[in-house]
Image (cartoon, rainbow over all chains, first blue to last red):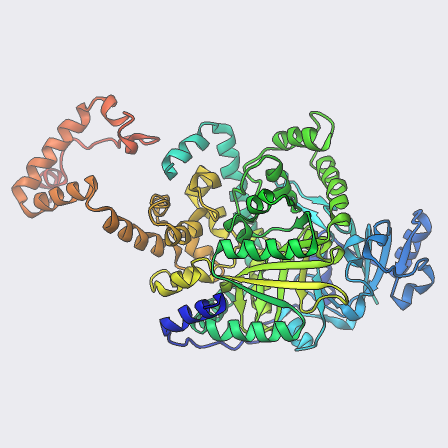
Length: 186
Length: 452
């Protein structure tokens, strides 16, 4: 007997009575979604920035490798998507588009259609995500309603930069992935 | 070693024990602060509990649905009856890939299966990539907490081991400096690894996808750079619908650390072109627990660790005192199901205050199950000394005369009892406890004198 058969058989042998699956109701959301999103993002150690602030950052900082798949920042992109993700190990700045966000926790949804390489938001030193203001939703339930059953090989909610508190509970930003997350709301 | 014996070892360093207690309490307070911003918190807990109850009641159906959909997505699904088979499956994939180094993100299941020593014996280097896990891996220790694996360590300990392993400055205890050193060290490992292993927080039957949550981004760094991703999950990690994730992702991080969500919440459904994605479904005693009616709903656990942070015993005895993969209150109801004899002291490592049940995001009645396990263990162990004294008490309470005389005797003798009897090593009760002040007379005598 295969392990699959023995596991399923053991469960079937218990003849458990089926319990009901609840519906998920609507819950109240914040009145000012941009404000709620900003507060949540700050708590996650990310920041909201304007397009001009990002342009200023680029002109002030000596980033040698910048990749942008966002049309709003297309002209700053100075490299091609490589064959292997490891070749992006020296990527200084990535600017990508997010589809929508949940205001309660600043979680921004992206999937394969936003990511030319799945590794980009993690391997880059600094990350900028561009989200349309009108695409800020109230909470995670609304976010999953929006995703529906859309098919993508990979999807992710990003809510802040890479961080850790594993050393005596001291919060340190920039553990393995992006050291900073800036979100441009347009 | 029993829990009290291990706890004694932990409590030897009083300052550290106090720090441990206070630090975990701060995490509990952060959890409280964040949930108070969610008016529907209790409703979410109820929903999560019902969704898990439903899933467990037709687990076979959902496992097959998951396998069917995941397979259609291009995921290779494996079934493992026990830890040994789980390890063998991973060993086989690594042999096929001729892979000698892997990166692994946090997975309590691989700890439960003792995957690291299994692979080490076969010449495979496992690099744990969660910062806390890398630290304890350097120290050859198991995690002492399921969310904060290195919570038992001070930054000076970490500075010492990093100086030895990563050649950091001796005595530099700055967490930013130490984290940066680990970042550089682990980046090298990420860039070289061909195979990455992760755990699974939730698997969705409806879509055949699974979700992994981290704050560090280490799971994503591993899997997106490697050619092969192996994900390991206990069969209880299933949920039926994608929209159920909305409920669980709102609960998980808030319960665990007080954050509104983890910074990276990755949904894996198909491998990138040219890459491989494996999913191992592991039983290892879970169907047995499912068959125990009183303990079934311990399988609803989403591994947030909130019950540990709140537990007065966990905070004051440390994760290692439990001697089990999952420590704390939830570990104390899961572990006896795996080995009743080995873990027989764990259900007693509780005051039954019920705080664990109050904070549990999926409403597991943890403290009631602790009580139930005590009954099972006492039955299995036969009558104890405590049982004998209860029988004696039964006789005393039955006879008014015996009750009166024994009360007088107790008041007289307890006052004159030498300390050596109470605080002697054979009397576990006397450890860390003092006798209360005794009244001069019984309540009955007092009432006779003072009644109007």
